[in-house]
Image (cartoon, rainbow, N blue to C red):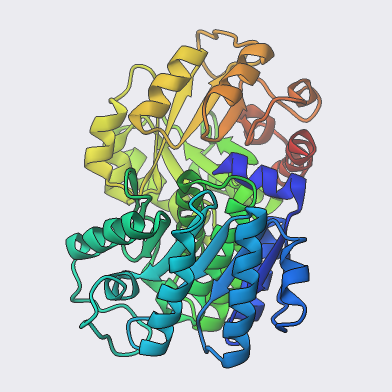
Length: 462
């Protein structure tokens, strides 16, 4: 996911969207938030010209009209000719014969050109309707009674018939090209409380596909959007308007989640001062938080963890627990960070479930690849410099860090003795962010320290 986001920002691709006026603004803003450029041209006499300048095309059937259908067909033909990826968001095909026939007409064109990447997207009802002529749903929402297994079967059938990729979005997203299938379980019920979030996902898929035209990019888009929705939900029950604003904010900073990663240290200070330092750091720009307490009892760890979790979620920041899967489960933290001597990642995943974050420590390329294959969501790599937080410090060279970043597709955070003055040694490494302890927790002004470190981290990733 992180590599796609960075490439979108670097390439600033143009995404041509022919979509409905109900969600047009939200789709455009989602694309802008990722670092791409939207253009919403739909006049039949100009769409071919526009499509030829774009890196991806989105066709959305919402609020369909004759003019838009004509424009979509012309743009689709142009996109197939120049081999740019296309997302066909089949909104309403489960409740409209007109839309279903139009979808079939477009997809029939794919049979003649199987070299282009085409993604047929829909909710469970829409995907199921495309392979079951007698099925009909009420409205554009998914039928809650429709099973995962039936939808999966329909997605495979649709992919095989037309030689395309398929995304069935729902509580568990299904992404398949007929031969390979990926499942993504991120998200929150709050996404269904505002209109247009499904359309936004289609636009986000188009942006991701503009830099990497395969189902991995679709999976990354679904994961990013689902996690943005989860983070927007943190800290309370929001009204619909507030939730939409928070969702847009989270999409815009999805690439910054690991930008400034703070590992807490309560050594030598009381709880009040500790929580003050953590909150000041959050105000200063800490984007990811890990609570690490080696010397507290389980009861003390849980009590403090709940207080830190409340603070983290107040600022929309995920909290993971160092080492202790039991503590993470007790406080319902966002995940855990596991070292080499801790619980196996696969076992932790069984206990925590698919929606939680699992980070892992790696000091070599071999270890990084191993824990990635086991299911780690991100890596902490170091120590880059000697630290005072552990008795033994095994250093990791910057060259090894760079090699690890190249070897795995998940975010990599550099850790170990880093501060605003020495972190620039990491320039050129494709890190997701920097991880610090003392540079903030021992600072006289944690907020100011966090602000400086956040700026440095963003400069390193530019």
